[in-house]
Every structure is written in structure tokens, then in C-alpha cells.
Length: 82
View 1 (spheres, rainbow, N blue to C red):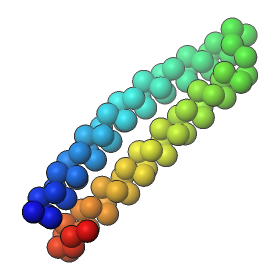
View 2 (cartoon, helix red, strand yellow):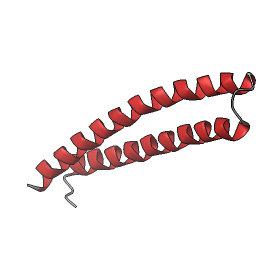
View 3 (cartoon, helix red, strand yellow):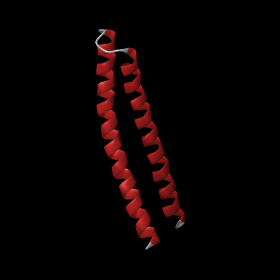
């Protein structure tokens, strides 16, 4: 029961990471576009910074998910049940 729940948790974390990674790719494109628009004077600096901060937040979320995935894998490997 406990190990089966951990496998489901691991699967869910991986799917969530995939979704967030896809979202990150899209936001990276938006950030590139915003950089171009800023250089052309079409957006203000604060809008450019907001898009870059958004990227950092997405990367932080992916990092945290990777940590959770690794912790869950270690628990499964070691037979530890929360």
C-alpha cells in the first residue's frame, strides 16, 4: 500500500514536471520576444524584468520538483515509507 502510493506520487510528480517544462519553453519564447520588443522601445523595462522573473520562478519550481522526484526515488529504493 505505502510503496504503491509512492509510485503514484512519483508518476504524478514526473507528469507535473513535464507540464511545467513545457510551460517554461513557452515562457522562454515570450521572454525572447519581450527582449526584442524592449530593444525596439515597444515595452517598458519593468515588463521585461517581469517576464525574466517569471522564468526564474518556473526554473525554481522545476528544481523543487526534481528534488521531490529524487527524494521519492530514494525512498522507494531504500524501502522507506512515509
